[in-house]
Length: 190
Image (cartoon, rainbow, N blue to C red; front, side):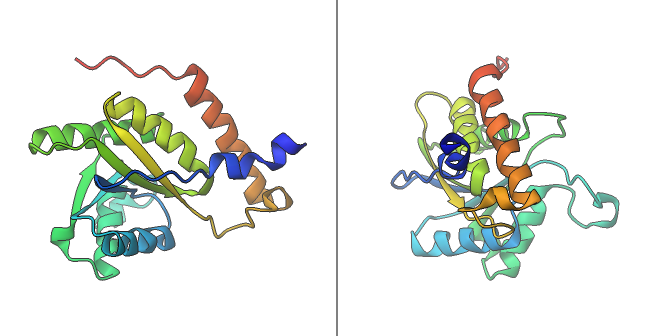
């Protein structure tokens, strides 16, 4: 039981790298995007890179077609200037969306002549450990990846098993992390 109850702190890891690029996954809720905006200002990063693939619902009705675009627009709504944000959309895929978003970031940086070896990625709660692992896989062995897990406000992280949403998310992320850690093999780039 200790293993199960310790799942949230294991998954919602926080590790820092100094300097580098600040990245936020565009699918995170508004309060996590607000945290990213504060982090940009307080830690004096030059820009905030917003990743994400196509919206899963409502895209025909939305001015934004990807989570990267929606996240960037939300950040502007929180007071960031458009030139403080880089939108890095990723293609539509059925699986491994976090990995594909990290690969899109890697390609975007290469296409724009940007060189970075350190990345601080902001994610949501128990998704953080998997995010760090997949960004490390995508960005390569020379990249140092830190991750910040913004607390999921939809359930108590100390008693996540007491709500259906907390139980579903944490156990799902535990399974997904196991897949990413032990079964996932990054495709070879051409």
